[in-house]
Length: 92
Image (cartoon, rainbow, N blue to C red; front, side, top):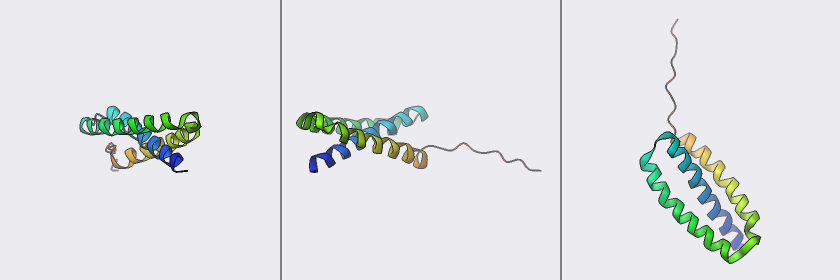
């Protein structure tokens, strides 16, 4: 059970960082892109080491973590990082 949770968390973290990185690139957030690259490296190494130890039985847990991670990244980036364009209001 602990290994399954570890896989879900590692994958969620990695995929969240990948999704966050994609948004950083699209929106030109250079500083965040650099920091996110290092976080991605940690997630990648953690995930690989765990999958190597567990094998194909990890597929479901990796998929679940990926789904959680990408939804988290999309929500978080839009809520806290992405700048909303100024709206023009008409005055009558």
